[in-house]
Image (cartoon, rainbow, N blue to C red):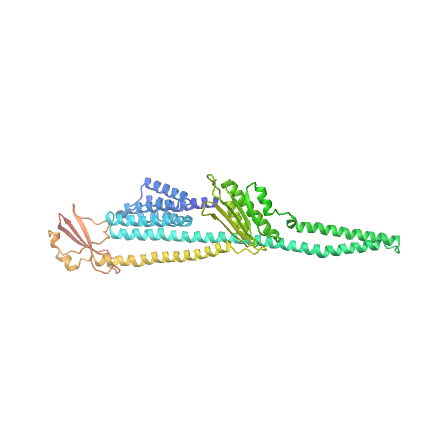
Length: 493
């Protein structure tokens, strides 16, 4: 119980480092002290509630990251992205790890994506900011969430593995008990018979009149030794066959002890194996106990066929039934499956309830339901692994293809050629100029504009990957008339 608490505390401290660093940086988009405190509290709350409310925790982390980025995207987008990036990634992973039903978390991711893109396109930055929001949520939200889902399935597989190991141990115990009982039977039938025969012969020898007194004493001693050995053998056999010697109540006795008015039909006339008889006893007793608890006064029928098909059914409850935990029925299913049988419990069409168990003549190795659950879990973890790889590949491919593609689109659609730049003259009206439909999105920092003027920036050429990719044409307008123009050479080397 302590390990997850300490783990979350360590993760909180690690994720708090970039948040605090964003407040002490000298960059323009630094965080205020109150923002640092608010984000740290929100992240702490998200880590506390993520186990029980993963979608809520994921929503808190996504909202905080979007606000932090979008508010300062025009000042310093790097600070907005990185400050809460570890916190969002950690919360997303835990949200996938603890979400048994992934739909709520998936809806949260989708809503955050749509909201971020809409705000970016309408209020903050435009299409480049929308692309950054999409990439950020994909890398920091979707991918860690997918890995959390994979970790959940892997943990399920581990749990099933330990359960299967425990069942194998129980099967081994049953096999050992059966072998002990078989050995006890052989000792009783063979060794016990020989000892009894030896004691009889020695007793006859003791009464032989031709023997001397000393020989009779020796025969008496031998007879006593053989008798003692037979008694010790009986004691050992009693220990080995303790379970076999315990009386097992019949179906009739179980019904009689219940105190209910039961219509009993027992077609089984042949003896029943001891372990199977105990299972019949357990199922019948538990089913009748449930009737007393949940449907008192309802008519009850108990039927046991010749091939050990047991059925306990009751009619609808005359009054509101009590609410049970269901653990009794789960235990019955486990007990029946342990001997190789089949179990079912479900409401009937008339409002009653029916318990059915099909038992074998002899206990068999367990094949269900744990083996089936293991196979289902293995299949689920394979599917989850494929989905995780697919999501990760799709997000990475989208970023690798989308970001350069957008850079090309941004450069090509915002080119102001050298001829257009030279033809632009101060005082010229904007409508009389041949300008591109789009402007560049990466407005330069630290560039002085004329007073009361609005400046626009255009690409100098269509290739966004060469050494002159950062060069810009600056056109500044006041009252829709050009007041200045400038070639901004920002060569990267």
